[in-house]
Length: 122
Image (cartoon, rainbow, N blue to C red; front, side):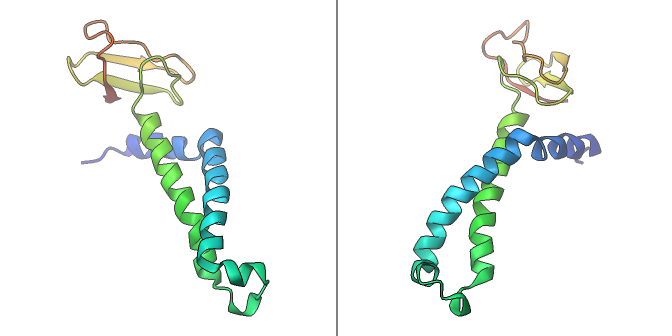
């Protein structure tokens, strides 16, 4: 069963300014390129009557969603030496050691596992 606190943690990461800014930048660049590939002639000639607005919107939405998902997945990894984006209770996958990290605190190595530490949400 998925714990409700996970939804809160994922939600905080998804709406964090860093994730939103990165997703918007990627969406703007990739979405524009894909729209030019898919509807280039219609866009260049400004033929609004034949422009598929649903396709236009989705072409920006997909890169935004993929970037948001990827950034969130990376932030939830809690890699050692990176800053925690939120307060979290972590558990070492290898040995089961547990720690609490605060927002913007550097994520430490596990005392038992050292450099081979792999943290997951507790």
